Length: 292
Image 1: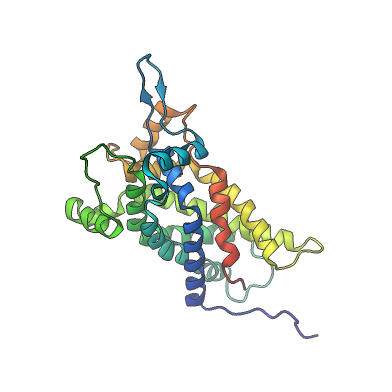
Image 2: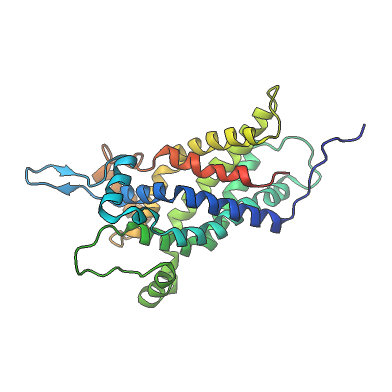
């Protein structure tokens, strides 16, 4: 009997382009939440007269409101250009390489459901490779997003994304573009594994339920579930990554992690910096990528 649903072979270039486009679309929709996330991750407790320490930003909605009130609506889209640069490279590579790497690990003649550990390994590798290439764009994005309302007369560090690339190279050297690479690799490899492997596994599980097929609804449900799972796994390393990129006071990754743990675990700890709805929304980019 002929196969009524033959597999569609999609080239790496086609997958890369579709993935990059989908990731950029997701970036445009979610960059205000990303800006709020970075501000929450980088903020310190503000001392008050009675000895208490109060944060400037409180929660995702409170942070969005504060930024809009102090900096205008456009402040919520700080770093969007660098974010699009990042998604073109990172989004395209991490998804575009996933299927080829997964096939390489199991062999081209493999038949059946690919084991979960192979999916996790493939996603770890593609996430690490993609962010090594895209780290400069991530650095510039965090630097731009971290700038809040400046006092009168104080100039901005960077005029925009392109100026930021050149200024960092001029003032800090080319190697500075890869500041925070260690925690960034850890963060993106872990999150990519949590997103893609769980997405793949959840999608396969849903498709086995009567009434569900390879549809947009299936991809939507898998994307939401995988995104929520990813934030639970990647939050601590994401905090360290943002702080390493946005704050030069830390000597290295371990120093950043230890200082954050010592001073802020509790009300403002490593696990309370990323609104879960952010990753759930961002992972919907998978719904716009062609699937074989």
